[in-house]
Length: 395
Image (cartoon, rainbow, N blue to C red; front, top):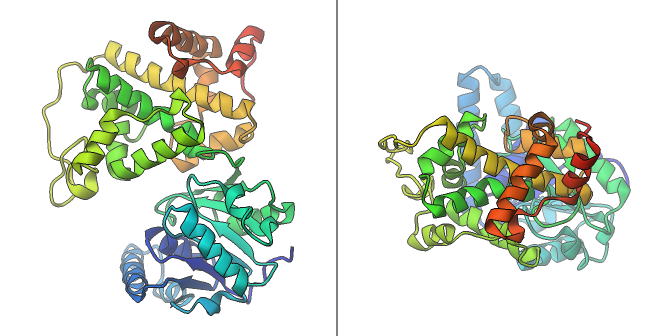
């Protein structure tokens, strides 16, 4: 696989928020970028959005006027498919639908060089399944950026089973040049972040369903141990429809493993159209300017409640990280980087386990499994082994 020719542009397909953000990232790093979309209106919106971003950056003295103009000039927006023909890298950022992505990649194969790397920004679909439909599956890879791409440091590199090692190395080189923290994840449902983070939402929803603690208390408990946002605040920000869809995708992809089971509360909020901040109503209510409506502080905010909530959620998060390590989803350092750089956890989950004590984590999981009698709380065999041998994670 040849190295990137700096005189040739890279291409982004899809001029929505994610595609436009990735284009900005590449342009800021000095790349010439072709931003392709079938709708001129989407390209116009992308251009207007970047102009606003650039104006803010100049006003805050983060970019000079010359830098601002240069970054914007590096992005060429077009509806003409043929303009991507000479690119060394094409990243698709269209709707999260395997059929649509497959059709796009088939069209790209008719247009680009055999050596062109075809990358998908999917957050949950199988890279191996997508690659398996191509004539040159070895050049297909997942590059999962996080939204907003210019601000979020993490990118998950997800090789298909068929992906060439040269392609992986080339993508690592690009992302380093783009000032991104790249981690390599095995092609399994949810990759690293969306897999490991499921209990942050799922167990919070289970606690809320039980009715002992309200959503404000649950959010407050998680912020008290260092999380920037509570699970319900974060679901409202992400969009409850998006979070529910990812949960369902992961649940189904893992053959309905109870660890990833969606919540009825999630479905009801989606059915009601209470999608979060973007609709003005989710788990909280939002004013027209996007700020959250003030609500009475509940009376159950005490240390015992906070410990009960946070220990329960943290035990499941750590268990998920340990199992991901056991199954070689990623190495220890990449698992830690993914959660601290991708979703801003206060520290890596394996480090958290060491600090809490692996035997204490295991005891909490075993107690919950005994109470509920559910496989949802089964401890990872790796945690059992490490507790028995008195070992700690190497982080």
